[in-house]
Image (cartoon, rainbow over all chains, first blue to last red; front, side, top):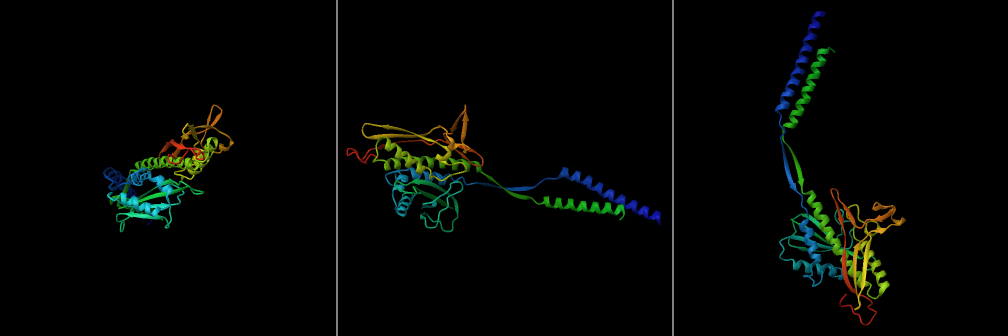
Length: 158
Length: 185
């Protein structure tokens, strides 16, 4: 009986060793044969150039108000009328965007946050479209006591 | 438990683990690569710099307008105070943007002309420092002197950008003088 147990144990060890050897050899073989398959979606980030460039051009041009836009906006309090004038001047631009004037912007680090009370004017049709990029620029008010800066924002929709 | 059983169980466990690894790598993995991050940063920094340059020039024009009833030294003092108040309201971008507090000293050149017009040139300049600036990271130690740097250093996550604001305007001064008017301001 004792010899039978020893033989059975030896057979189990033999099978175990064989299985481990099989794993070892096959893992080397399949490691050589293996091929990693993957697919990659390459997404180009919107640089925002269109937004910033348009905004800076609007602020620096003297074609819209016969004086530099940023100076005019800094002097005038009729923000809504001014935004509509800008939008009318840009009527031939094939771009859907919203222009906003707000009084506050703490940081340009990410993007300005402005409240719903800010004055805005829409160019084109932005319904059922999503905002793809936004940008902001600062305007110096001509006459002021405390807050001497207001902000023009542009949101582009696609 | 017999040693043989342990080895068999161990080998079966090992086989199961390897099978899982094989199965998990069999299916192609999908991942997304975003390109253009650097381009995005460059666009944002350069366009913000343009906006700041435009803002600083407008601020100078408005400060000159608000100082139009002063003459000589009073004009200069009022202009500088009003101008720096305005420019300090510009929002910070990235972690390093506090213009007149730490990052930049704006120097001014005033040239008063005979026709009651003044030419104002604003440009960054280093200054000999005082204790006021000693807590700033922007202090430059050079030959025993302490300087504040003369540019705005803008840091983003991947690049640094040095910005040197500059403006030059002409303005009437001393409008309390009846010979002057506001038309050419």
